[in-house]
Length: 280
Image 1: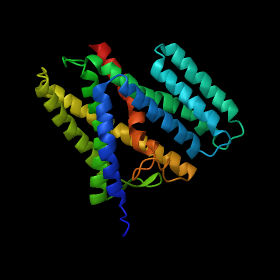
Image 2: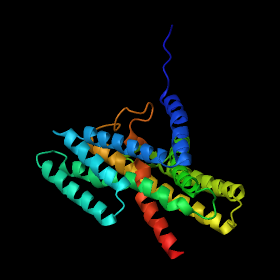
Image 3: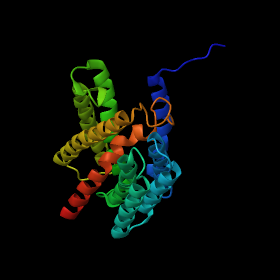
Image 4: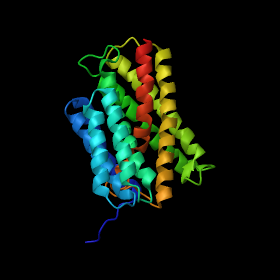
């Protein structure tokens, strides 16, 4: 029987059909499923970071990354968390004195702990969003944030591959175009507006059109920030001379390849909504 070879796009679609229900299911179920999912993602990312960067003691670095990841998820005192990240970063920097990529190995400590940790912080920050009953504010708003990042990824892929045009950052990511970025931002804005319109009607929220438009504007901002994170990841991989962070996810590459925009945007979104919460 002839073996059927799937194209990259087909692999991406099939993998997404498996991953998306898991993510949405964990978000909807809440504790402890969301905690487990985020910790698992962070652990896999820790392994990827320590293996995609050539080094002499990957086990030590993985342990350091997972330690600070655990602190960001389960330590609720900010000064203790800050101290853990700083001291562990210093430890890795000293330990990596003879490593070629010393700075990147050290960067892994704050990048993973704060980036992945912020996904967790966002979830609980949104716990009391608006008047959504049964503590579903976390689910609704975190899913909105994820959809903004997915929107710019999907829109960028479809529009960019169809229209092509001028390159966005040819020296960093030759396949990305300005048309893809614009298309991705537009899709994120459209998804935000439709999503908030649906949420307003499902939960009967007093959300005027002006507020829905504000969320659409925030969606555009998140889309741009996520693309910057994507370019940052591309620049790191280009610097290291690799195509994918790993081959864990068929058709997608690695965990880092899939959530680079999320973990770059998450701390910024957390800070932004924290300020908005304090303002009100």
